[in-house]
Image (cartoon, rainbow, N blue to C red; front, side, top):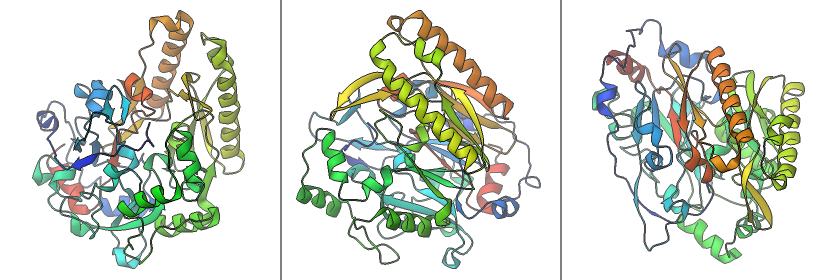
Length: 453
């Protein structure tokens, strides 16, 4: 599970991923569009705050175990964007904190920094990387991005962004970094460029009540043991602004988010949590498609009828009502164009902490890779439906995947399906296993174009 504690020892060992494809002129037809793609014009057009995932993508960072959980990426990867397997790890003991099949999971999206356009004079007009706190030691030890002493040589150097060192060179001087003293996971933040959306789980994580949430999943924490984890993971180490973690009220959490993400407090929207969904992340039910356009999945009566077991239907109906309510809220209160895509109802329920947990095969958890405004790839989760789930469910799944393909095509994205069964059972999908890095400087963009990736 994405928020499970996977106490791993992290080893920063980077490996090149598919380098031949990146340099294959048959696979990369990008023109010399330097005059068309002007970094300053693009960057200046962005609102202050987190850069939305539909914006230009320079790089996609890919979790090393992703090749096990989404094996299709071994053959159907992003040929033009720079994709890299980022993490090697070792574990002690036989228990790897398994998320699926013995794989020790640290979801890439949940510790890769949030990239924002900063208006802070100290940022010098540069992109700013916002790191954050985690109780997962593997995430906290990831100093190739965070670095307790500030930006490290690996932050945006050739090890992180490129396989070919000429693509970016050293970009440490093109960014600034600051550590936000909040406990958060990157999957629980979606930016449209107009608003920042999270679930109310962010309030629980930064309150004393978080220990109750953790213990529901079968762990045995008390105040002292949790405090020890906080200390070991640097929660009480002052950041660049002399601030550190402390338990906060919802109003205080909102204030910290507003300050560090450089978003007005009224533009930070917290939504309820999807029923039966174990991560409590907003990116399982909300996808930003544009500054005033979002997609919220829809569970239909036809989908619920396709379920093989009546015991699954009550949760499906609760999720149906939840998604309809959020869609109406986003449309009526916040003025969004809200698109709806049919989604499989939740399945594969388990009992955990007295609550039913389910797997959501959601079209909201896709990877958007906008390479130059023309070649816009979207990687969509595909599900191989087991035969014993019944023909009605299989037929319904095939039908809605065609709907997903049509939707993204009509919105200007080239759809590519990636089999995601294993990832789904680990409570994550394509977006969870990846993190996008936008262009961070004129030099960065020009080198990307010059080398025709």
